[in-house]
Length: 51
Image 1 (cartoon, rainbow, N blue to C red):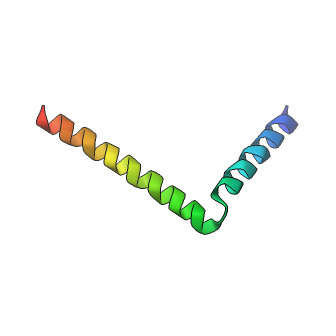
Image 2: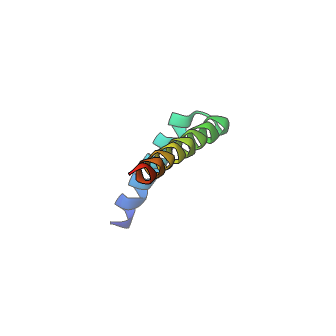
C-alpha cells in the first residue's frame, strides 16, 4: 500500500513539475492562483457589504 501511494505521489509531482516547465513558470502559476483567490475573496466581501 505504501508503494502504491509513493508511486502515485511521484507521478503527480512529475506531472505538476512538467506542467510548469521551469521554476519561473511555477512562480507565475502560484502568483496567478493567489491573485484569483484574492479577487474572489474581494468579490464575496463586496457582495456581503452591499446586501
